[in-house]
Length: 334
Ligand code: ATP
Ligand code: LTN
Image (cartoon, rainbow, N blue to C red; front, side, top):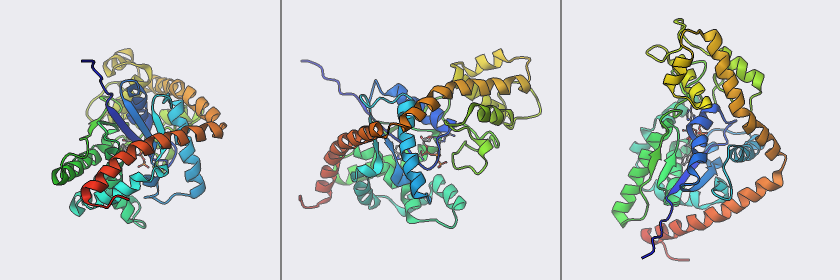
């Protein structure tokens, strides 16, 4: 008997809620690229998620295209992976409604991202912000996803997705594949350069806390030179050295070295030598991505072709799951 091995499926998404950071790249997008040969991958720009926080419409449009261009600039290949925009495949919103009816209010109340974001946007704690994880579960379950590459802040949402899938499968028999998170060993949580106890976030008010993929080399150098460290002055990881530990992780990822190798390389040297070295490594890491993104953004026709074809492929896969779900819950076939 000939053996047909189908590739396992991957889904992940990034919100066009601002400009992408080094954290987004090292925690997520870099892994998207390395996984695309071994898996059948769908990578989405999740614009429906982005409007849970108020967005300027013109900027949202621009940022959506920019995230797509950055997917391509980071090496995602539309011949290998399906790249698309979430709002172009209505099945995401349709499945989200159904799954709302299989998700408990109490479960959603426990989500730390909801608690953080509702504290931060106290004047706009809308139902979408609360429901955000159900839409994310729909993104994942719609494609019978096996693996979800994300930064560690998203683990709780994937756990919730698994609970919802299990509940639905329990009521109606096997419908959804049970997804697993894929979290890289290093880079899963890049910290803020100004407060190394918090994750680097594109929506931080302090622009010195994050490195953007589109930052100019002089800005990258300046931000690393100003990065908060400690008064001890040695290049090693440890308790109370979260700032330096973060810089060691970043330098290691940018140059392909382990943390031990970085510590050995800079043994006996101080922060005045290390910080510019991290800056230079990141400048070189990001230079080709920035230049490629700039080129791609000049070619809107190409971007349109990529997202149009992506949405067609994704819609076809999504429809299969949605039809099955509609049948199982008892809706009449149209
Ligand atoms: P926001 O700041 O608007 O909440 P975000 O950057 O946290 O946005 P997304 O754009 O949706 O959120 O994140 C895309 C991916 O990047 C997710 O997989 C997320 O886990 C990952 N990610 C985000 N920040 C970091 C970080 N500091 N370190 C590692 N991975 C991260
Ligand atoms: N919530 C994610 C973005 C996201 C996502 C997804 C990630 C939306 N849908 C599906 C993986 C799979 C975040 O990073 N904030």
